[in-house]
Image (cartoon, rainbow, N blue to C red):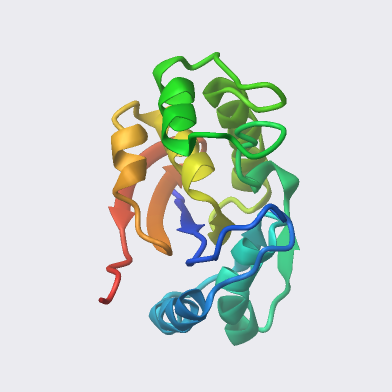
Length: 188
């Protein structure tokens, strides 16, 4: 029974601005990225994938340098689009989309839409890299939405308790999720 290990990595801290693609890590995020790289040096990693967003790429690029492999970007792992622009009340917007799986704000993605996009990308990765250890740099909402595909206890309350960065190892046999382990503990 050959397993595939997927390390879902929520990006490290980034100072918010409207440039979703170009927003990089903050100083705090860069320090956490170094700690994350040190942690992951103890794990054999075969492939590094990421959302195309700079903060996600920067979070996993130290791991990629360590194993001397490129970070490959996959659009399916980008953060869910909450709306077509800034929202007036972020918490209220989050409550709205998490309380109704099919609701979306104008120009945004519903939970179900974002989940399906992420899962499609994840299943392609599971088939392409079967039996490998894969790091995926991604985002909090999308990470939890993908995890909720397998178990609905991964919800908005779980999302609220994520760290930046955060890492969960998902162990698969084929497309069946066998185990989930948190492997990151944020240092304060």
